[in-house]
Length: 246
Image (cartoon, rainbow, N blue to C red; front, side):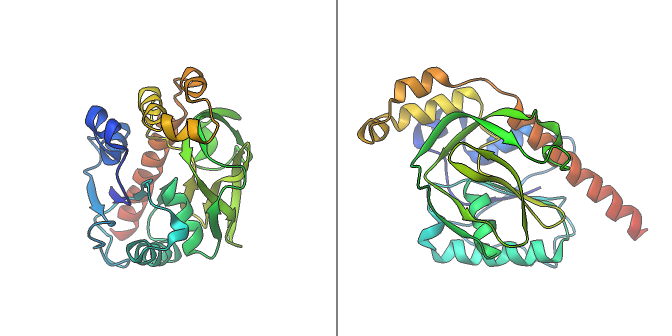
């Protein structure tokens, strides 16, 4: 499994729980997948889009960076993602920044959420329960979020899959085997609380009650179910591709 790492978690969370790639690895079947992490914000070196035979799928992480700032490394990664998704060679999942970056790369518009910062446990409304990936979630799933920017206008080819309050494009399908979700399926309740506590001063400065957000954080299995479903879809794709090549 190729993890495209676009940034690191807040220092307080890294010290206690590790970084993004560790949280994704925890959710995936370690017997099935080795993990190849490429930290593109430091060294934007990725396999050629037509040389991905050894990979079952791609996960693009969150980041403290902003897609709308269009850093050189981010734009190059977006071009790579566009090529991978256009070729439709393997499943791709974008998370938070990764979700926004895919949307931007495919012609959508990303920017600050007009409704402001979103943080904590939120209700995610599944709009397409028949989708291959989201079918494992309940219609009103609890998810963990932390973000300032959102997809403001999806690419014309994208299909809306779900929303949260203040974010109608919270989950999108990009083509046949590529998805993006604004929430963090790799977070558990402890990580979510840690994030809020790390941002407490900033939240209070924006007039947001950080303690109320911490108290409202819920333990939820939605994220782990979604990641394991993605892993299953990658495995099914790999098995099918292997069978066709024999």
